[in-house]
Length: 221
Image (spheres, rainbow, N blue to C red):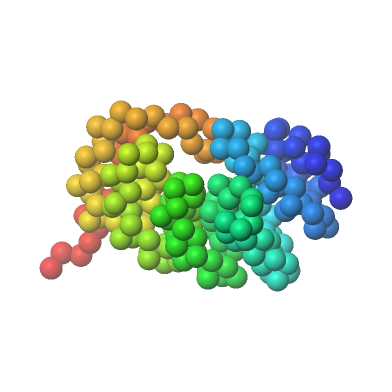
């Protein structure tokens, strides 16, 4: 059984191979990782979120029922009466669905249903983008929401809405995406297992290119 200290050290060093080796046969690894997932300013928390998804995807091949128990625990975190900090719950669930979409396809619309809760909104949109990269069909029901959140006053919400628009190929949102190419806001995001600053205009330009390419690929009538 991996100690909490061992898990933290693996996450600090971005040693996912070491983490997976330590996690083998350790049923408590999810509890430890979830407990480390609450601080959006700490790269260790983001690596813990990613690790939950990767380990769930691997374990789900042999014992999807055990992972389902973890999913239910995270869903409980999102209920007010749980008394837990639910901020990272949509991200955690999104990573699990992304890594095992067949067994947990039913969880995608549940994640999306929490979009109007301010504390969870960023995580919901990020989960839509993350799942959408692998299985856009599971989160296409979120499409009507994305345009609204492209206009949200919170820069990180706009960022994740842009990411989702590109992953879901929402070409109808191209005018709104073009409008954000002049957005001067800068956000801190988790990418390639590191936290880095990203200009909103940059992701808007990248998304616009994706959508234009998709639009140009449409058959002409």
